[in-house]
Length: 99
Image (cartoon, rainbow, N blue to C red; front, top):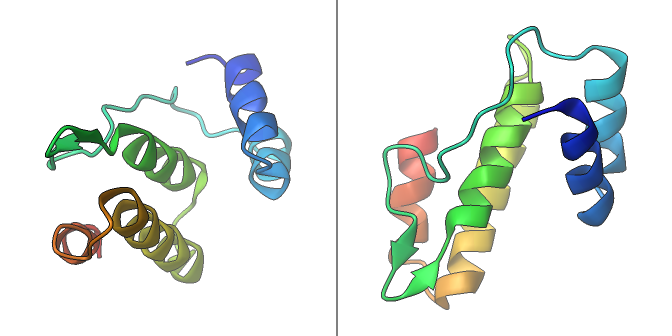
């Protein structure tokens, strides 16, 4: 995915800090996402793809040693999946798989 599209996504989602980080030091590899890697992208006809996509974006922009930022991204994934599914039944194992 090209950087101009990532900039648009960050603007739409109000991820200004994340975009500033990407813009100031873009990762060397291109961004790719398959949603919830190693997990389902839909549960009981509810898509959780965007939550996984956003998690992938945050991890792609992260660098070694940023354990706190990665933990926050994992926690945000847990919260988003729980909200989408109105349950923690799938969110908690999803969080555990990320950590």
